Image 1 (cartoon, rainbow, N blue to C red):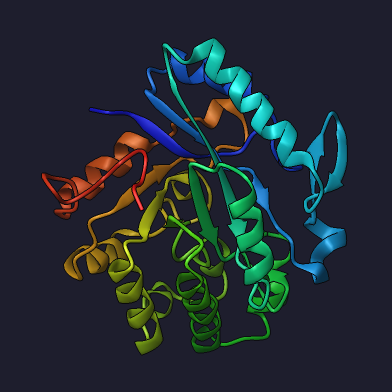
Image 2 (cartoon, rainbow, N blue to C red; image 1 turned 30 degrees about the horizontal axis):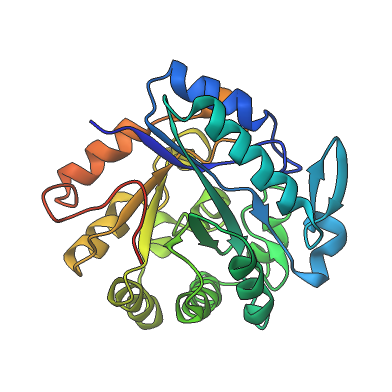
Amino acid sequence: MYYCDYHVHCRYCADAEGSIEEYCLKAIERGISEICFTPHYEADPVRRAIDGFVRMEGKLVSVTGSWLDSYFKEIEQARKRFGNQLIIKAGIEMDHIPGMERDLREVVSSYPFDYVLGAVHSIDHTAISSETESSIYFLKHSVSELLEDYYSILEEAVAAGIYNAIAHLDIFKRFGFKYYSREELEKLPKRARGVLKEAIKRGIAFEINTSGYRQGPGEPFPGRWLLEYCVDQGAKLFTVGSDAHRPDDLGRDILKALELLREIGGLGPAKYRLGSLEN
């Protein structure tokens, strides 16, 4: 089976460790054929002092600065060194910020990204994907408000036309199970159904993010129920990613995610495309 990992964070991310070179060596060691780096790009001006930075040469610098020049230089160096053993792609994971589409689009158009992953990490400028911050939002909102808010942002992300794939659908499960029941979190309101159908229509892929196996719910993001819904609605494009923040997590549970996709009928001839996405 073709083995790839399309969600990898290296030390450019303030919360990650390991160089591009170290990840490439680990990929070769583990028999991974293709790897795509996806450093965080979180440019919410309200959260600038919290997570609006990346690490470059051991120092924290603004995410809106020129660090991407260094990133692409390292990618090219890695391709020259490991290109005969490993396919290396330059991606990015962008937190979608409503109202900032022009700025995000400008970044994407300014660099030769192979893959742009869109994500919803924050609602009302509060990180629902963070263990320390998520309670601030969850304690003040009903599950109906959560789903409405989350899918409203996702709706704008899909409409923006910036992203090749949507990262970790239902990421709110990571810490949401502490505040809401599974039955509540697995509801699909009308807006959510419309957003997912629009993403499929536009040819946007759904990522199967395996970090959920080792963090929180013990299942991927999205979970089986939501994957089944997407497949039933005609989804044919999927990517898989470990969301590794350290080399030891590279490729973790990818094969398990692929087996899940096969079980629900989403992995088969003309039913999926793994690896590079064609627009």
